[in-house]
Image (cartoon, rainbow, N blue to C red; front, top):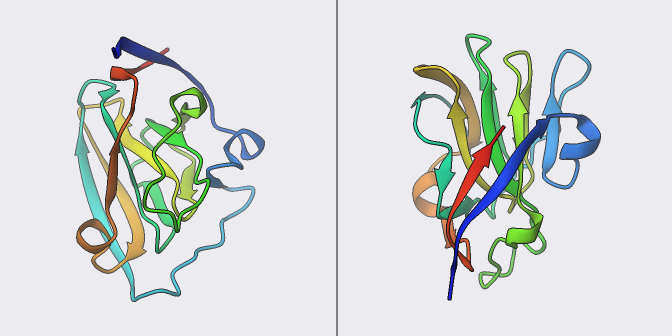
Amino acid sequence: MAEEVLEIKVEPLTREAFKPYGEVVGEDGGALLDLARGRPHVEILTTRYHPFEFTRMARHCRCTQTLIAMEGKPSLMAVAPADDPDDPAVSPDPSRIRAFLVEGSQGITLARGTFHSGPYPLEAVTRFVNVELEGTNTDDFDSKEVRGYKKVRIVF
């Protein structure tokens, strides 16, 4: 029987803490992209404030994904490590889900296969530069339920 709610506490985004999930983009350094399996695609992603809760996490197995806030607004991102991006049976491990506060002066590059939910903007509307492969959200979108819980909630 599934537990009711798994609460994940928000933590600051640092290069060291985020290393299992990807790279931090900031004034002190950038990130390497893995876009060799298709045509790189850049778009503006508009997100609206919504509850910091989810039941599923997605991953992109063919490429990295980079998200950088355009107006310097903070957001939250929940992640779980990509143990094997080439194994279609892999699901996010609830015990390894972490949530990060991405400051408006930071961006993130998710490693290939990293499970994620978000971004969760802290303001009404936040726009991001989104870099991935063309067709990623239709051709390379692997969404898995977080097993053992009815929902996951990000808390401060």
